[in-house]
Image 1 (cartoon, rainbow over the protein chains, first blue to last red):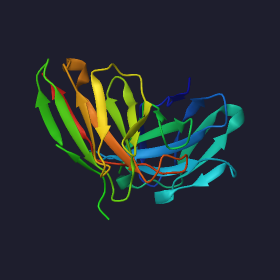
Image 2: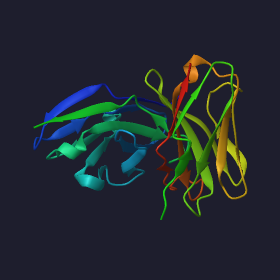
Image 3: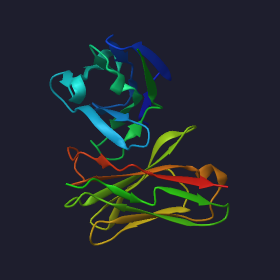
Length: 113
Length: 114
């Protein structure tokens, strides 16, 4: 069965510092991988997705993620964090694309001044 | 273009009652999926409807059911509520049910079972 692990429950980053959120997945075939962000009182917003091709994918709001098959990882990065990035971030895998997503437990990002 | 709308936004029920949640997808979208979000279990897929047919179902008991209408609006129903059903229920819509059809999520309905 597919599964997603986000080892960090909380991360605190200073504004302007770089960010990396970790995600490891377990799936037998080449997965469809996603990162979503959820702000308080909001639904989930798609940041980026990996289906195939270039293993470094660019997303919205300056985020990028790198697919590493050998490490079963899909870590999310941002070079310079803004206070508005404080939110909860979810990594997900989809066995058939966007449908029937399997989510990780999320990482809550706190941004300090 | 209006986003996904979920009603009500907040709901309080007692154990044993039943509840119906509603989701209006983005105009033109034909697929609706439902997810349950709890602190303990995280985000879990409930089911997906496309053109009024259930296409996928998650691992939830039969107390959880849903349907989709001809205008693509969807409802989910939970019968005989249990305390553990307290959660944020998220609805997502997409144009189709294909691998590349991005899902857009609504703000959710917060259900509290007392």
